[in-house]
Length: 144
Image 1 (cartoon, rainbow, N blue to C red):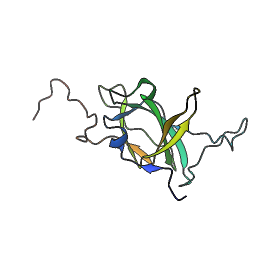
Image 2 (tube, one colour):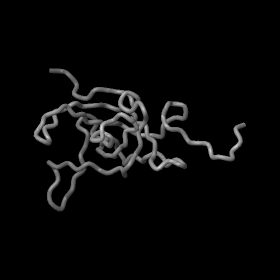
Image 3 (cartoon, rainbow, N blue to C red):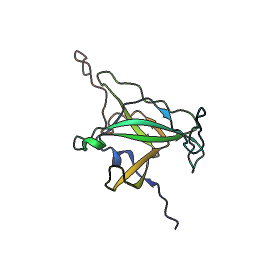
Image 4 (cartoon, helix red, strand yellow):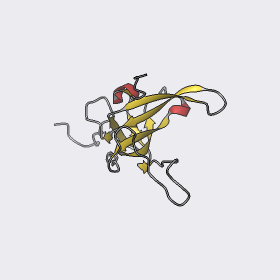
């Protein structure tokens, strides 16, 4: 069957209220190629790029507690750098490029349910005016 298992989605489809980086970017371990004492980083089957992971907080106020924080895997030749922290915010707002979703059956916990794996090709700071968190003006600044 020629159905692609990775479905392209926009950042706004997955994170309509925005997303925030809440961890460092870390290499994903290839469990099949690694051995005790020798860790091998996973590579993307489609691009051949290294795979990295980052934990993200979904800003959707109606997101369930168990799906509020999730992992996004990023395929890139070098370690991606998260956007800079913004003054007044405890987390770093982020927008993902080349986002895909892969549905799968998660049987963890004794009850099967549909789950989703998120992958991206990059991350960046959200554009001001994109409906995502923007820098707050400091009190005392003149609105010119």
